[in-house]
Length: 474
Ligand code: UD1
Ligand code: CA
Image 1 (tube, rainbow, N blue to C red):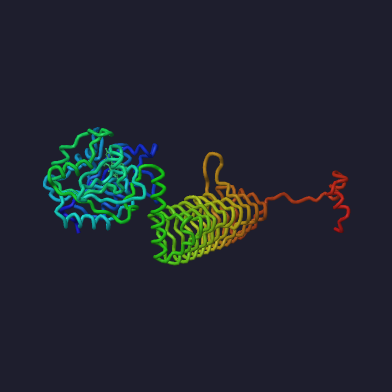
Image 2 (cartoon, rainbow, N blue to C red):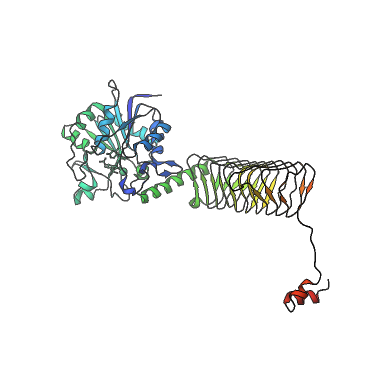
């Protein structure tokens, strides 16, 4: 049910300087989604009456993601006054004039924060008389975070940023998580009083806390017992630490849902993947994008699947696959490379050292060894001989090959597309198929073999080959 007294503001305007990246910080991928998308999903789950996201740095790229993930959010462009305080000031101005209630502010770079934690935080604030509540935590390393400064009596007094803190303040281990709940009226009053008089020359949202206290309002800090929930991403080291933690949570979630994950440390699963009970993931496996894997399938070791669909009981080993569909009971790999548009039917096989692209390979059909299948359709129950190349490219254009059902092609064939091979046809070993083959025909175009008797003894006298030929019983 929509919480009519709640507005959520997501801060996403910062530059992310510490990432040292041409990609905006909040668009760096984390478990297959931009960092900001995790926060937007959490914001959405709160079902607030109003959502505002503040952008500035690379605003169009951020706005595109926000419009896709959280279309109900108002997008506000921060002007050139820097700082989280200015961002919130502009966001508050964008709220409908008749809105009354609480304003939840979340930094866009705390992707592990979940809606349950926020719901408990909102409830704690509403049960108190505080004008503002701040989420705090005690991480192993407080470096970089704003510190929660308490009075001698233990009450929460103000927040001091790392760069503005004295040595004594830096020794404080309780940090500001970047998550705040304010009564709208109190917030409005204090935002108007923020200045940029600090080391970074920014309007700090965190200064609102000290100002509220100075005006005699009560503020409280709710401490989280697990600091990882509010880990902020400022640099790439923090990005990888957060990715590791998130992956551990995702893997565990699937394990508890019935998936065997033999080695969680080397198995990476994106947020959007779906796995059925009794799927087995072997070591060194990455399940990326919106990949789905049906029950009984065994994937790995050393396999990467991106946006793939794997059917029941399929076996996929040592394979790299993108946008491929693998049928029930099919077998893929080892060392297979499935490119977009590969569709393998049930009980089919794409074997060792085989590359496929835009290829539909029917039920029970097999491409077992050392082949390239590009821009092709293969019917059902066919077998493509070892070392076959579908020559799809004439140097300018790509063409298709159509192979029928129950076809048997010989080893080391080349199918020069466009080409059709009819149902039940055969081809001889080493055939370069340049003309269509009618159903039921055998195609051969290899020159007849000629044996020149005694050639080696005559032309390579004295060699080991010649000696072997002389002493041969044949
Ligand atoms: C901020 C807090 C710090 C807290 C930490 C928690 C302030 C002044 N400091 O520091 O107390 O411990 O988060 O992770 O708020 N942003 C804007 N507009 C701006 C600047 C930033 O929208 O002008 C956004 C950023 O995109 C980011 C968020 O605000 O999503 C936080 O900004 P960041 O620069 O990362 O703040 P921290 O230095 O981490
Ligand atoms: Ca930050």
